[in-house]
Length: 190
Image (cartoon, rainbow, N blue to C red; front, side, top):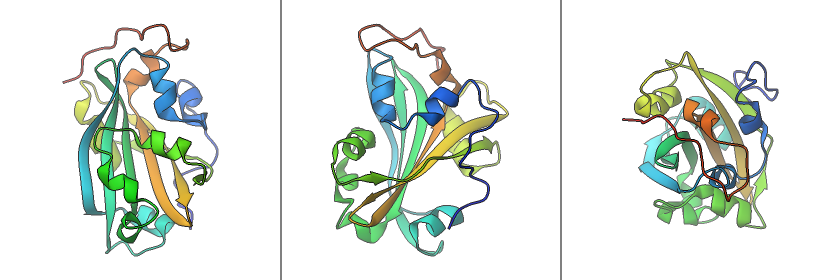
């Protein structure tokens, strides 16, 4: 089931397009553009997920699922809010590694496991009333009209994992060079 509000084509996002369209590891791309990369865990455990997320994962929205939320941090500044979720029964199977990630990147697991299959990316400009916007905007000094997000399903042994990444304005300050140079100095976040 597809959510009509998440689009397979990316429109009206010129500044963010290179980040949104990239099909490789977002973690690796950020690491190549800064000196110090970190994952800041926010929440991990069972929770109710949004109706559209539950539908994509193949269960009813009144059921609890495993959910993990983190900030990806470049040189001390949050640049991405990441939200991932899967059915709780898959924590005993395919996605067992999700339980113990802590401050390690999910991208490392997803892009190094030879059996993980990624579905196409979908995009959305999140408005301030969207729950993921609210979670992501907690670290911003200035809240923009919208925050760009992308999501895709990853499959391991037919078990889906939904990963949503919300791009914070500070991501645009990261340089385009290789991993040996440093990031630009970014504005401080609270």
